[in-house]
Length: 124
Image (tube, rainbow, N blue to C red; front, side, top):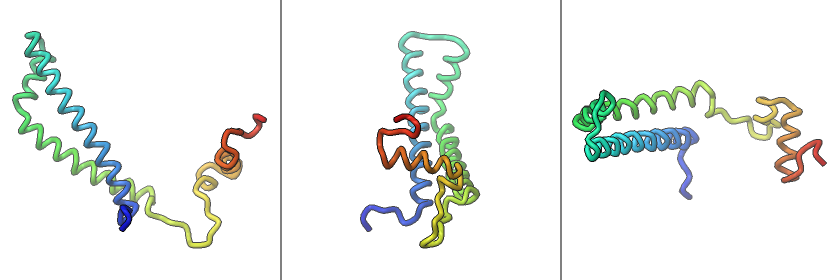
């Protein structure tokens, strides 16, 4: 298969789920680290009590994480479909997504930046 995803939605979904995975890992790691800091320095207060409570109830936090992944997948699918990211122009058409989104003048600027490289329009 050459390492290519079977569909553009798979690529979009993989990117979204990977992003959420990183956020969840940072959240869990942050809670664990804050719990260790609170324990080592015997920190008190409402914030530190809530961190201690989260550390004591990681099983319940797991259900929340599963719900986050399911909700993210559903939102990802909805955005993909509603934004029509699966639409492709007809073969042989002169369709340009840059021209459609930004207008003809913006398309010329984008092309001049990409074709010329370092030369920007109107700057020499």
